[in-house]
Image (cartoon, rainbow, N blue to C red):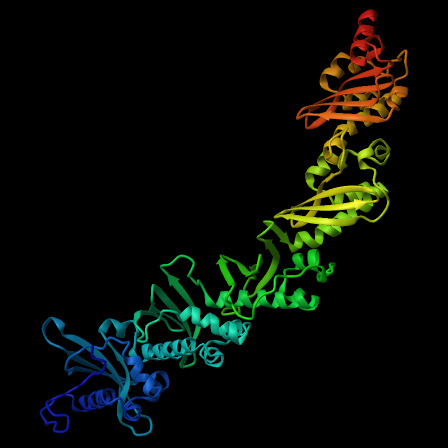
Length: 600
């Protein structure tokens, strides 16, 4: 394809006859074409306006850029000249010169815009348009050349993988985002972006050129490289680039966003290794820093060691989020980042770290820093509150489910009747921590009692969801045991106080219908139930909707039959045990019904 315009007007260039029309315009167009044909930058400057020169003339690079513009082949001929006058209509300030190129169906029209040179007072080329439509839409060759010069400069810089040329070709904002990478990391990133590019640049389309921004699509192996430019005065600079690959996983949606996110992730990693909380506060979201990092001893956690380059790094963008993953041995470090809102046009994209996960490939454990740090602190706070019977603190550090089933229903007086909630008043010793995504299990020893705290991520906080301790006579789960016991303790206290409303509130619908709704005050029993209730707890057997709770033994004690109604275990019957034989068993529900029948 030809990349110059060999204009020959009126026969010989040097022997124009007086019969030629538009002699001045033909001379200007011809001189312009000769400079292009000869690749003569000095002559090109002499035959163009200062505005054209500042936009599109950059030594030999101009002629290299011209190869990417599809200039028409053939011999142009000036066919029409339109003079543009000033507002007074007296002085011609511009000429629009139309020339035809080619013959027959292949004939095309070009439009030159001529202006007077301010110093030499002669006509020179100010711009060129490849069609009438281009003229009407202001798609000038000068602007295209300016963008293509920026394209060449940017591609040369990125292919070289050299830091200074890459930053020099970029807008200040893009350069700052890229500046967060080390020289080695930026070089590796540049090689990844330009991999499989042909030596000769092939622009797929250059139609997306506006007043302030432009976008170019360049062929790249098994995909396309999209370069986005922004005008800086008469010069265009690279503002972002993207890789659109036909191979899954090779896309880069935005180098600007990727480098900004990567820089933030690397800053976090470096600051965390130094335990530099001042820097961490700047690169992390407020909730993550204050909730997890600020109160913690960062030296307790060692991040996977990584190399200086990007060989094992991967980063993905998903709307306003980014995920930075680096692999090291049997561990995988994932840094999750959240893009912050941009408050001004062209502002540097800013990402903040909002969580970090260490994945152990051997144990298949997800160790989230938010879980690791806050789980331990929450466990210690909960443990202290448990030994001090501090219900309010227990509520604040428990999940919604634990609160609903246990702590919202419990009072200080209940603790003496809950053997599974009694722990030694000493600081727990952590034996092991297991991470399972949003779930964390901390194995501790408190006094001589081994326990497992189960914590869940709820609303960004790690909260205690249960406490597991060895048991053979009742469930190992504190939640499962205590929720059954609460109604029994409340029933016992209400019966002793003859509080019928409280009794009915802890009894099942059936027990209330057959017994308690008939009394204004508690009935008198031949044997005082309280003496039987004081026997120690010996067993809890529970299923999905029923439970049997035993106090004492076969000679003395009480058995409670529980039924689940309205998400609570309620007392359905009580049997007082006065001996091992059936005649020594006193079921409270049947006894009361018998007494009521005799009264009637």
